[in-house]
Structure formats: C-alpha cells, structure tokens
Image (cartoon, rainbow, N blue to C red; front, side, top):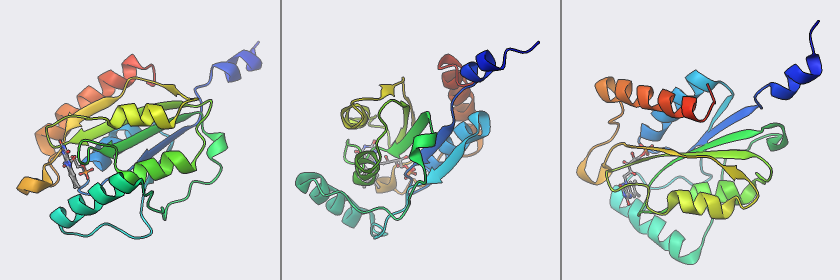
Length: 183
Ligand SMILES: Cc1cc2nc3c(=O)[nH]c(=O)nc-3n(C[C@H](O)[C@H](O)[C@H](O)COP(=O)(O)O)c2cc1C
C-alpha cells in the first residue's frame, strides 16, 4: 500500500536556476547546482548587452545603479508559477546586485517561493547583493546563499572556476546543497 498523497506532499518542488554571467564563473556554479539538483537552467540575457569593454561596463552599471534603471531582459520564463524553488545566481558588480538581476526579481513575482542566492566575485565578497535579493523578494523564503571567488576582469582574470578550482567549488556546492536539504 502506497500513500500517494503523502508521497506527493513530500516531493521536493520544481526547481528553476536563473543566473547572470558575463565571463562564465557564475555559469559554472549554476551548472554544478543543475547537475546535482536538476530542474530548469536559464541564463539571463539582455535585450541590449553590455559593452565588451570592462571600464565602459563599469561606468554603465554605475549610471544604472544611480538612476535605478532596470535593463529590459531578452530572457523570458514561461509559467514562473510552476516553480517552488528558485536559485538566483549573479556576480558582484560594484559591490552591488547587477541591474539585470534587479530586473529579473522586479519582473517576476517570487512570493511564496523558496529563493536561494549564489554569487561569484573578484575577491571583495558579496557586498550588498544578498541583502538586495532579500529586499526584492519580501514574500519569499530566502535560504542561506553560497559565494565563491570567481575571476577579476579588471585584472584580466576571466573564467577562473575551472580545473582544480572547479573541483573544489563543486565539493563546496554539494556540501551547501546537502545542508539546505536540496540533495
Ligand atoms: C562591471 C563589473 C563590476 C565588478 N565589480 C566587482 C566588485 O565590486 N567586487 C568584486 O569582488 N568583483 C567585481 N567584479 C568581478 C566579478 O564579480 C567576478 O569576476 C565574477 O566572478 C564574474 O562572474 P561571471 O564570470 O559569472 O561574469 C566585477 C566585474 C564586472 C564585470
């Protein structure tokens, strides 16, 4: 005899993993989460991408942060309602949450869902990024986030989460996911 109602009630919810990544460090972490947890993996693409030039991008991001501009996204998520757990991944930009991730969190209603942030940065940490996720998801349950050092484009370090660093990061990601009972 199988109590199907209890079984379905205990099934972990549908998982969405949304990430923003310019030099693929955050993408590498997103793929690790996806390999271990499954679900739908979605990259955030912009209608109007940032310049290739790093300094120009820094300047544009700074202007967007000052004015509160939310860049329009090219990515759309169909039926956000069907997901119960939403991982949101992003680099630290100017010690803040990148404007495209602010666009995503402003555009989609994650009320009632579990939101789990993850981050890569150039060595200066998460800054205000996790706090801003919390502020933009006032009706979500926010679980403990994960952060690791990625690249530092300013100094020409692009994708650094590879080889030994990738193996170490995946082992940390698994420990974190176990702690959150996601695996
Ligand atoms: C516009 C811009 C601003 C950045 N600002 C910071 C920062 O304030 N602090 C930091 O530690 N790293 C900063 N970085 C470095 C990135 O956070 C780091 O390289 C990250 O791993 C990039 O992730 P990605 O490869 O997924 O794009 C910045 C990078 C860019 C492009």
